[in-house]
Image 1 (tube, rainbow, N blue to C red):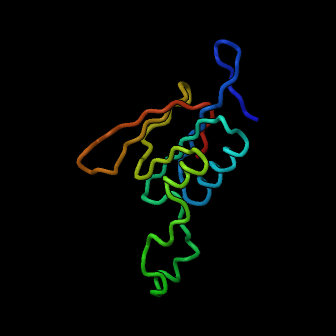
Image 2 (image 1 turned 45 degrees about the vertical axis):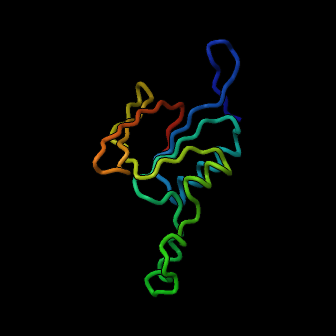
Length: 126
């Protein structure tokens, strides 16, 4: 179990930032949750899908699957509900500072806005 001692000597869950979703990032986040129920897990995905069934692409192109949403394996909401993972889609990481252990990202959900997110981490997975 991962732990992170605080200033009082007790332990708290570590902060884990994962850059990239789909199969690798979502699987990594789920595994991290199984290893530590107290970890604070943030998953950042630049595109609109956090988990996507790429094996279904031929069926989508061939017209057997007509709704693109049917190819979403997990959604940000389902990962939050099932595993308590904070998922941000359409969020592009623009800076990683390994000395201060921070990342900076831009929320591109609304193209007219330029919301910036800064997050600290104990461990970073790309």
